[in-house]
Length: 233
Image (cartoon, rainbow, N blue to C red; front, side, top):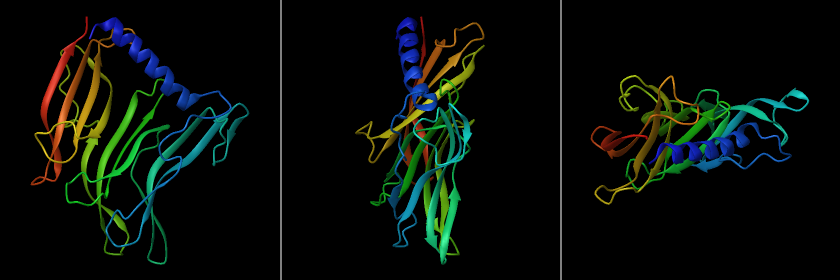
């Protein structure tokens, strides 16, 4: 992809996402987890709630306490699972504090026939370049409450971001989970990331990398099966 085209694409995407994070409009654009997801994640017959819990809100008049009004230019939040177990609601926090929910869904990631894994992606920063994404499987803990059985994929970490081209730094990345390849059963992951040089303009990295990942049941995790590094003109 020519670098100038990617620059225009990145600027448009950043503007759209930044509006969702810092929008000054009267109504904040809709995001995943504006309404909680309901699913029996730990298989105990009782549904849990996956929700984005707001921690702080900032609007034209300054900081206000959650719940954040639609006019709030900025909010911070975490993703958590609420389980009505052991006679009370137990809360399991899954993320760092971020600003924007870009992906949230309950899927059958481990191909066991049950849609009980949670995939989410959160972003932060003026251009939403900071990212945290996970695919998480659950179990019922000793107390009967939902607990993390295994994190099937966590991004960005040393083992999930691509090798940086010489002289560059990791700029940003994103994930998607869907049936990308008919070679494998179930859902595959795609990561898309960019790498910049110190001399690059903020909109326009020097390289992009696309990597596809498949779920390996024997190892209970996603592993890469195809990757492509592109140097931008």
